[in-house]
Image (tube, rainbow, N blue to C red):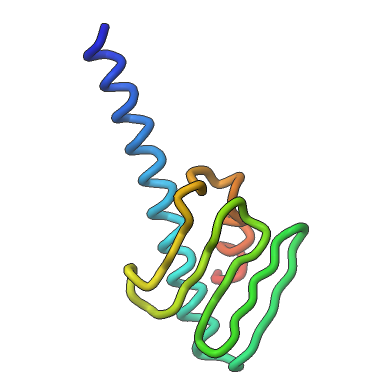
Length: 98
């Protein structure tokens, strides 16, 4: 039973990591799109707000901090509390970048 439980935990961790990777990828794509436009931009949707100013992208309204300062994966900060699409406006961001 212990091995089965460990396998389940690893699967859940993989699922969370995959979701976080998708969120980080979406944020990188959004940053790339916004950095090529106006210097200051703001978008609002429900309780979320995207603010792009002086080369910094912030998403407000999430359960933890979300900030992007450049185009590299390491330039994206996605707070550790964010582990699910319901805690982050993933689908809205996807609609902006497509």
